[in-house]
Figure 1 (cartoon, rainbow, N blue to C red):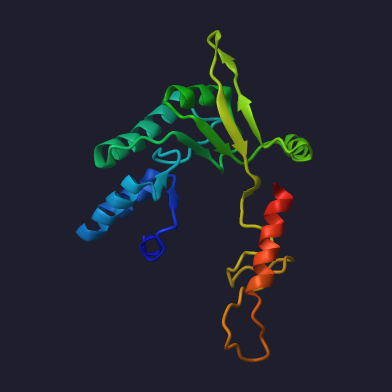
Figure 2 (cartoon, one colour):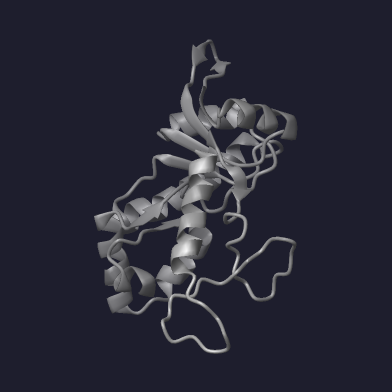
Length: 203
């Protein structure tokens, strides 16, 4: 919330209401008011909005419905909001039955991540991460726009700045100060151009 207060151009997306409701319930009054204002202005967005992010492949349909209903009721009663984006980034598998339920709940688009590695490789070659998924269930189509994240839910390679993480990628810090010591150079322009190049290549 502090970052939203500092920078009016920033937005934040929350997915699971089990965590968000706990945060909201323990917030002081002026923070609750800020949360309501950010929600109304579209700077605090909800994707999915269920109590949790459910697995689809092994979850029984009434469990999926109940947990979504629990989260959506909290949003409706507290903010008079209803999410239209389904957000399934870390579930292991997608099912046509779950897609039908999301469709009937009023979701317009589904974002996902974990798909079969051969399917993902084929989509990468064709630049086909977005598609209409329309399984025919109960004799009728339930079409929904779907987008597969190309890099799961990770940051771009080379931009993970957690000091406790060691891997093979070059995570050079961004330095924008003009008064660096120890021979360090300002690299803001260079790193910005590198990041722009990364997104152009992925597009």
